[in-house]
Length: 381
Image 1 (tube, helix red, strand yellow):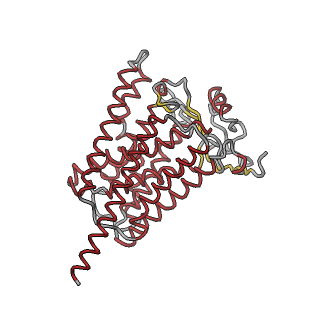
Image 2 (cartoon, rainbow, N blue to C red):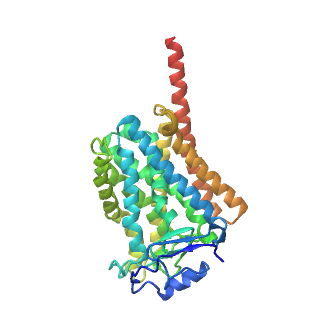
Image 3 (cartoon, rainbow, N blue to C red):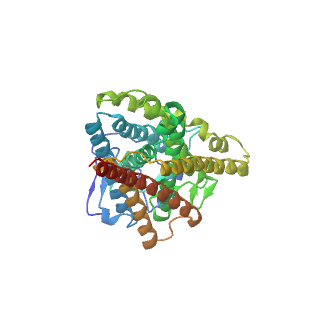
């Protein structure tokens, strides 16, 4: 029994007509039950000691820390350099989740239920929003992880090597590939531990890696972060952004533009839902090629960054990306040991290896640049 629970049902807000569908109830029951008729439209709180799985408060705290560190990093960077671009990317990540997530929970409300079905249900966590459908940690996940991928790619020096236009395209692919690596670890772990449930009857979920639909691995983990990064380069990074006010409107624009820029990359999965007898094997092959192609681009940039690291950044600005990525990987290693299984090992291992390669390359670049600076100072004396 929960020791405390906050509801604002006293405020009269009508339920969405199709909120409590039969399929939602089935998926919710598989998670141990998620409120529907009596769900709070705004906010609900639960005792973290009485959630469906002991790992749930852990991921909430990990993501909360990541979001706080992301905004702190962006704010310090703006203060120290006078460049608010990264702060704009953080704000854009919040706009992105607010544009993307609600229609996925309530497609009928947004008038898109004819071509977008509710393909998953989140469990109830410590803090939830929107009729218990949106856990707060999911809202924070975007600034925590998408921004982390952005900063890691910044430290790989892609723009410096390839120039503004070509560099923005390659960097966008790298953001998607980096994000896919560490996000897929989370994605493979979640269903086994009741964080959410996928609708196995949805055709877009038919192709899977273990319990995770390839639509999530490719569309959500790879394609949409790529589109997000490209939107940020187009709207935020095209000119100097010295103040908070100069990035607010472009950040909102990035959140709105991202779903549209991602449409071409989502076509293979969209095809599954549009055709009566889709060629599943062909689509599977295309999705694997997309993953392999983006990874190959990233590996090439990792090799280049290893050979020519960027100058070191001091303090939090320099330490944040590798420190948080290291904490992310270590946390999931511990969770996987304490509470297996944690997804498909054959896919998790490459994701860990890729993420470690990014971590080591960025960390080595920082250390190598710092050593060069020390040597230069010693020679000057």
